[in-house]
Amino acid sequence: MEVSTLPAAESERRLGLLRRGLDAAGLDGALLLQAVDVLWGSGTRQNAALWVPAVGEPMLLVRKSLERARAESPLEHVVPFPPSRELAGRLGPARRIGLTLDTVPVATHQFWARALPGAEWFDVSALVRNERSVKSAWELERMRETARLLGGVFREVPSFLRAGMREVDLSAEIEVRMRRAGNEGSPRVRGFNQEFFMGLAIAGGAATAPSYFDGPVTGRGLSPSSPLGASVDVIARDVPVLIDYTAIRGGYVTDMTRIAVCGRLAPELERAFRVAREIQDELAAGLLPGAVPSRLFATALERAGEAGLGDRFMGPPGAQARFVGHGLGLELDELPVLAPGFDAPLRQGQVVAIEPKFVFPGQGAVGIENTWAVGERGGERLTELPDDLMVVA
Image (cartoon, rainbow, N blue to C red):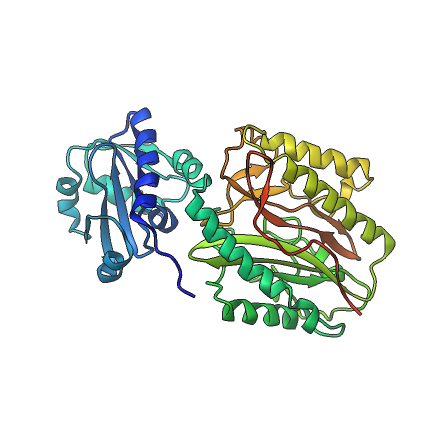
């Protein structure tokens, strides 16, 4: 299946929003250097720097591959990256310049400071991330395509999940089917030192192991070098099997979690699973323009407490994640975040993965996750697979 390239009108829309933000901040332009920001603005993930002046035409300076960048980007000015002594001339008289300092390494910043002596540097991370968070109709359709890929593979899980197989074997079955369906690989993560593979397929007590990743469930992984995801533990009967995977197509990520069991869940786990679905549905209905993310998190926390499950919500006791939803797009950890301190009102077109989960030490983890777009009538669901428990007799 052909993957859509970035239309010229979509690129113009994005860069127009960025220009307006630069103008409002009194900046002459912005240098987008992080690969995903370059992809968002130019349509290509080649090794390049994207110069976006507040006034004038954007220019993509390409180190490698110029041929592919010119074929993939709708921008008119796609040129070879010049010697550093020529950069000041290429960028003109700009002196107040924005960088995404949440991602740009100090050494890279220093290179540009030497190349553009006299320039003043300003952090435009929030501006870029806020503009990227609102998805156009074109982007939402790409994400629906990705969601269909993900849901198609999840539907096959009951046909190959069996008690007695190892977690890593279940993961491998899912991952090879994802790849054959067109999945592009592991999702990009913006956070420093945060790594994530394609997903998690973990069962029973292994699902309750704490680890570094900022999520409610991480799994044991295969070694201290990779302490995330599936282990070599064998999947037993009557324990929850948590399947949490991302898919990527055309760069866009969707995220989904389902619970399976070979046999039957214990009544307390069944109840927690039901509560997780109720929390998801309430939060999804609240994904309205103007809603406050921190208040949605507070609602989720309140519902978990009312159910007597507050100490197990979003992680094992003492190691609980402080969010219940995260933005998605070209990266796994975009804005908005349904968490304390995130008070900027939601905007129509933002995309959020809502993932209420409960962790029972020694028993396993249960929960649900789907990807939603903020809409005028509440969340528009992008991942269409039913939320039901997957039961393998």
